Image 1 (tube, rainbow, N blue to C red):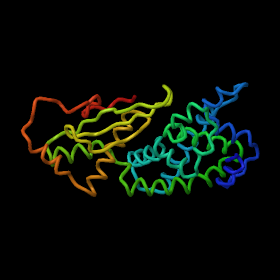
Image 2: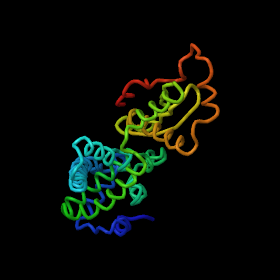
Image 3: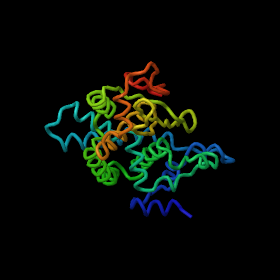
Length: 262
């Protein structure tokens, strides 16, 4: 059985006030199921979000002295988005230690991107209140450095939708279409599942905290497959076929739009 002490040992950050760590790990579904409703991690999430944003901006400013404001903003956005922070949460097994309601857990809440991202932000907020900014930097900067290297090496700071559209139009003369295949989680914590298609053929799939983020994840998935496999014979055959009057299937995400903020 996992305990807060186990998590402190895993983090290598002992808390002076264990109640702060418990609050950071308390999902709203758990707080609502308690006989005496307790405080969930949403307030700490608000604080942690601001702290992560500041430390990330400071790190990039110091590391890239010649970078433009636009380049710094692009890298910061890639580092602090929900999918990236969820990766950091997974790195420290945060999902295993969340205090979560039975219904939310049964629906896969421990692995949901939004939940992991917000819990990680709450953890950073709690750590700041308990140990101060320097201890947060010691904890966060190595993880952000590893994440930054991963993002750059995989091109995750680039606009994947634009890159995929440019390549598809240049090589196939077809614009990819996007569609939402599923939406999971409560209203305030929705996670969208999106496919990107060439006509009826799926090129990639992605998940995200909004339709826009999920569509970018699907485009990145498609680009990664193209790098290793190229266009499939089926896609090439569709591109060579005469155009028909039917639109691409299920395009409830307009490929020419921002795909919604959903």
